[in-house]
Length: 256
Ligand code: DAK
Image 1 (cartoon, protein in one colour):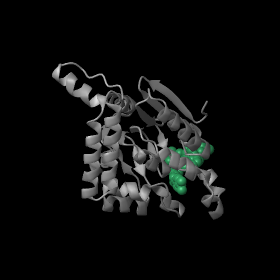
Image 2 (tube, rainbow, N blue to C red):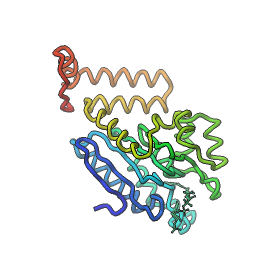
Image 3 (tube, rainbow, N blue to C red):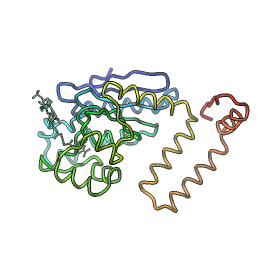
Image 4 (cartoon, protein in one colour):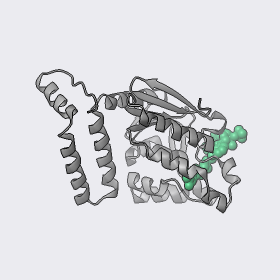
C-alpha cells in the first residue's frame, strides 16, 4: 500500500492523488518511488487506459522535498535515486492528465508539465522558484516550460522565480482549461474517460506523434505521422471504427 498516494479506479481511468499534506505534497524520494511504481502498474494493466494525477486543494506539489535536498551534496545529487524515479515517471506512455489546484512549484510544476493535458483550478499557481534557492530547474523545467509558454514568459518565470496564475497559464497555453477548484478533478476525469473510450493503439500513436512535434523538424515529424497512420490501417479497431460509423452505432474498440 502506498503511503504518500491515494489510488482509485474510475472504470478505465486511474486517479492518483499525491498525499503528503504536512509538506504540501513535496516530492520526497518515497513519493517519487511510489508514483513510479504505481504508473508502472498502470502500464501493465490493460484495463487502465488513462491516468489522472492530482494533489490537494492547497497544493498539487510544492516541489522537491527541501529537507531531503538539504542533506545531499554534489556527490549525493549525482547518485540521487530520485533521478531514476523521475525517468520511470516520465517514461509513462498512456495518456496522463494533471488536475492542478494550489501550488505547482519547482518539481511540482515539472511533474504537471509532464502530463499530456493540464487542467487547473482557478486558484492554481505555477512557478519555478529554484532561483530563490540558488539553483535552477533540474527535472525538465527549462525545456518543457519554454516549449509550453514561449521564451519570454519562461525566462521571466525561471529567472525571477515568480509564479503565474492559472489564468495567465491558460493564456500562455500551459494549461488547456480552468475550472472552479472543486470541479478540477471531475473535469479531468471526464476528459480521461472520453480518451479511455477510444481505440488504445490510435491514442498511443497519436500521443507519440504529438510529442514528436516538440522534438523533431517538420519533415521528420510528418514522416513519423505517416508511418503511424499507416500502421493503424492494419488494426481491427480501425475496421471497427469505420464499420460502426457506417452502421450508425457506437464503436466497440478492443485494442487490437
Ligand atoms: N519541501 C519540504 N517541505 C515543504 C516544501 C518543500 N518543497 N514546501 C512546503 N513545505 C512544508 C513547509 O516547510 C511547512 O512545514 P511545517 O513548517 O509546517 O512543518 C509546510 O509544508 C507548509 O508550508 P508553509 O508554511 O511554507 O506554507 P505557506 O502557505 O506559507 O507557503 C509555499 C507555501 C509553497 C509558498 C512555501 O511553502 C514554499 O515556498 N515552499 C517551497 C517551494 C520551493 O522552493 N520548492 C522547491 C523548488 S526546488 C530533480 C528533480 C526535482 C527537482 C530538481 C532536480 N532531478 C531529478 C535532478 C526539483 C527541485 C525543486 O522543486
